[in-house]
Image (tube, rainbow, N blue to C red; front, side, top):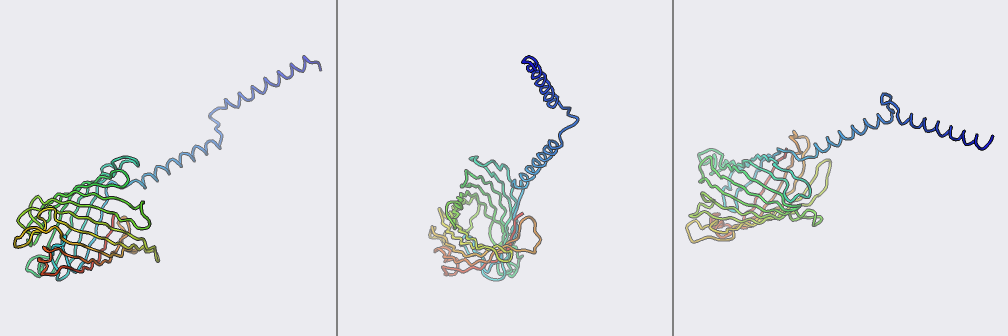
Length: 318
């Protein structure tokens, strides 16, 4: 075969190869590759799973908490209320997430909270005193905002009312500041917080002037691990209550005392199984609190400057 014939044959084979490749590239859509169809279905399923996971992990718009505490004695911010008979303190709270935000946003987790806290007595301030057991009902509403990764600020309006008429109604406006140090210290974080409350009508100490109250608190927590499906945690709450102005006035006059009380607690918390679950497991907390009272509260407490409180709390969130 001559050189010209060889070149002509090569050109013919190249032209045929180009035609075959072009035909494959222009394959009709009516006969799709089975592997490509399966890949498209798999991608769609993965997208649906990602959307479902995001919906499940997103914080609920409406959530809440409920529970009840039983105690042997009730002191409100160190001010004695009742130390005889049975005392039960049920509560329910609802939270409405207005703006969850995104990680990295300066302002996120904007939340509106409302609830009611009660104290029921069968002692002298309750049913044994000739009235109903419903000694106290506190109705409140607040707004909180998370700033950055660790700070949370809040505002709270509270009405303290006595359904059985044992004390006068008190209205209060408060501001709070909390710092989340859970990722800074290990294994124990302090979780410090500050509350400043302004009485706008009535007085918690039944004094002559509306007062300003300040509270500094920490609540270290230690995870103790699980046993037979129960998770245990130890809480060490510490709290000090102070009068900024006229909050702890002496009953018979004589001015105001800055130090109201100091509360040191030891609380063991555990999850419970076998109870109806409204959203999350129920928890039970057994605690002891040692209170040291300031001069004004000591006078109101028949001269005793310290108290030992036992508490049992059952609660859950949903």
